[in-house]
Every structure is written in structure tokens, then in C-alpha cells.
Image 1 (spheres, helix red, strand yellow):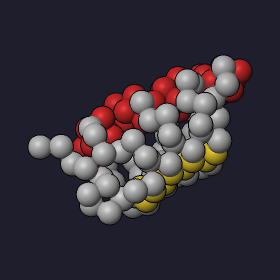
Image 2: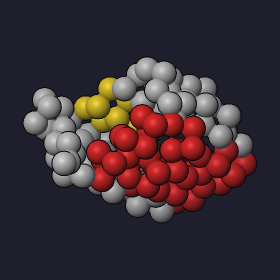
Image 3: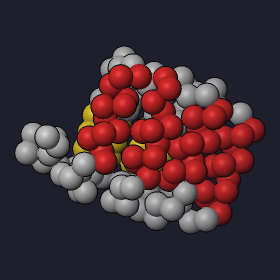
Length: 122
């Protein structure tokens, strides 16, 4: 059975600022792939370490062309995870705010983010 976030009272903002791990990240990715999240405008995922589920979560978020704000502050994102988010969100023309403060992003993520910006994302 799919979870409809609108039925749960979540219309435009998902605020998960808490110490969630990889299982929660994978579950969130599954929810985002389902119906009922098309109006999602803001995702606040600060202070989480979704571990190995970052790539899956980035791919799920890439499908949300209504997303305007994404905050991943202090999420222990690696260079690889940062690059996955940049690549996944590269085609999103509605995203205008991304917070990656407090993560360990390096050249790989920086290059992917620069490419996403050149392609008209965030």
C-alpha cells in the first residue's frame, strides 16, 4: 500500500530534522516515488545521516519537479553523495534554494553542482 502524504496532512513541506539513518532514507525514497507527493515544495532533511540510501533518495527527489527548497544541512554527505544529489536535481528548474552547509563535499560534488547550475537547475 502506498503512503499518500497529502492524506497524512503533509501538503507542501516535509520536515525531517532528526537523526534518521539509512533505513529511514530508503523508506522516504519509496514514499517519494509513490503518489501523493506531487505538490511537495520544501524538503528539510537537516542533521540526518541516511548513509547508503543517499543515492536512492537523490534519485527519488529528482522526480519532483515542484520542489523549490531542499535543505541537507549537516547530513554527513560525502563527495559522492553530494554529486548524486547534484546530478539528480540537475533537471529541476523549480528548485531555487539548496542548503548543503556543514557537509564534506569536495571536487567531485563541486563539479557536479557547477554542471547542474550551468544546465539551469537550482
